[in-house]
Image (cartoon, rainbow, N blue to C red; front, top):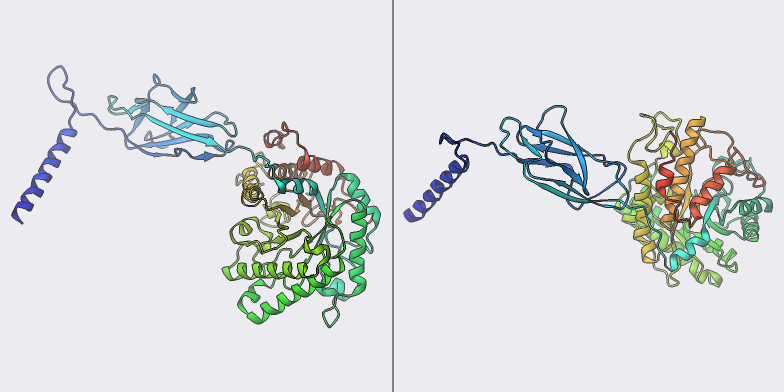
Length: 517
């Protein structure tokens, strides 16, 4: 014990001596007296080695030192060989900001700060150590090429017959007609949609409000839906029909907590798809089924529980099994399946692709982000502009362009890259109430469509036949005859070009640089 104590004490003495000697300068001045140099150390650096950054939002590097420093004008700080300018922080010269030039997408950068670029303000013999940081900027999404992408190209740019067959509630029970105000769907509608350049039409349908007491879908309604499908197929369009606004759609929270409710909801899903699939089992493969729309719990569109996620996966499996069991062309028909609320993030993290012996399933997702710009700009928390040129306070300001890219790229990397098709079954943005706001709407729609193309995602725009601008005003084509409404012809042409053009010079950067001012 005594020997160990002595050894430990000796170590402490030696360490203290070393610290004392380190505090003294090794250099003597001409008079033979010692000088003392303050050590300059980097405490924080806003730039991380090997990190990836958004080219448009990374504008400066912030450094913070342990002592006050000045900038040495005789030592160059460079980025890929180009000299940069450093300035002292506004509150203390311990903090320094290095301004960066406009960065390019998809480039490897190296920031070089030589030793002595920063020196002590009190003791100018003290030098900050050298620093070198390598980082990259995000590249634009790049289209992939595999079996899946060939199918996605066929679906192209699409359109939703919104607020017609998925009408529910009092509109049906009181018999006053469909929400879009159109009594019957004409062949002219689909012919004009196809002539405009659409390749796909999605026809949302609510079935349970058209059921007899025994659960049989009324024959006249089923025939009416089939008539619209026939007209769309005759126009050489791909057609997607789904189960939309049926009673289980917002009931997931209750069902997840009550086995009896869950069983009843699943039985309804199986009943709907057994009847619908039987009706269409001899149709060709240009008809696609979509099991569910935006199944969620009450008002929770972006937050779910493990139990809710698991039950929705179970519902999707039951629907796929019911469709395949009807035989005919349904044995191999493409089927779209959706995650919680068709939310991209929740789908990517919690959705489970059903087992399918035919291996012909597609993932369906929706994109309306940010919804307080695209759906409800007139609300108290609404915004009327979008993107990097939006006026202060008029947009959310959360790197909006990069948010679009990151969201859609998530689907490409998780599914498309693994030969699992994905389509954006709904996207859109309401017509705004001012000319300036509509410029930002147009910019948003073009940016979303071009990003979707680069991520191999076909898109289907929501259209509810409404006239004018403001919350929920999505009118593009007249549901009566397919003519343009609300002056949307040029916007449709722009979206179709963005969603389908293989022109490599038509980049997100080119759209970004032409944002409204």
